[in-house]
Length: 381
Image 1 (cartoon, rainbow, N blue to C red):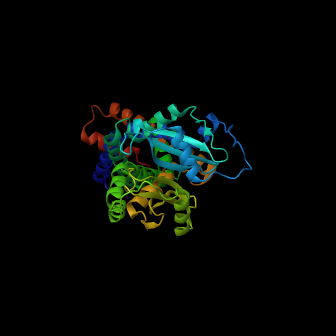
Image 2: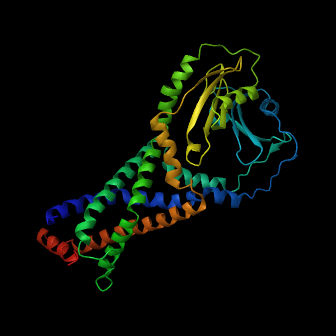
């Protein structure tokens, strides 16, 4: 590549990096504890709770629902979700089906006794703060979209860095650090080495991060179009006072999709269902497919399955990008690898800022010719 081409790509790399680096540093710092959110939650909230009657027969879902409504007189059920590792069912209720989230009440019930399970919320405020900062900087959808834009610009910085790597390293051994030269050149070598070592991971994590920032519009599109079609086809029925058994409806749904696992139930009138159906959501059984969900509508009057709707490709991409982004589909070993790569990326970002600051001081009074001469001296001979 000629010097003019190198200068052009260097300009692209410099400014795309400068625009996005501070936000990428914030994402790396907040992303590090989020990689280990399960382990942190477990450490802060030791699993001291035990079922009251471990050997007893579990309550059915109708009994749990009745307990939840008795616990909140005058409220209606909105959602029911299921604890994977404990015999616990979670029920969300509200004064009405259209109540805002601030009016909703969440409670967990022991399937062996019907007792209310105390919440494990130690450290929840801190982790929620970190997650919100990482997700949208407390700016909701505008914040998410802005971080998505920063992630896209970060991808431009990565690609331009890869383009520059070849001419800068063409006569230098891989991983060689020129310690005999200036501090700036030494850090340039560290920057290039750690950058190329992490490039594949950075591309994956940044791309999945950009996809994750589109969660709200993608989920809304899925709910309004794909799920909306299923709901529209079955939204003519009116809900009678005598509802069909929820427990029987769930068992019927599991028979329709035997290779999937129950995730949560949306009750009639809630945001994800019709006025007369249970919307029962299932997910896959493997570490990867467990993030892919499929809703099944069951007539709340008769208990008969009305239809199943698989997720469209864009929602599948969104669901698969979440575990890939945080590395939480391969156990603790993969999380540790993700954390190491996260730290290396931090070094790349911070060293990039240092190199720009040093270069700015050196070239403040340089002419274009002097800049080209200095650039040529930095290339390995």
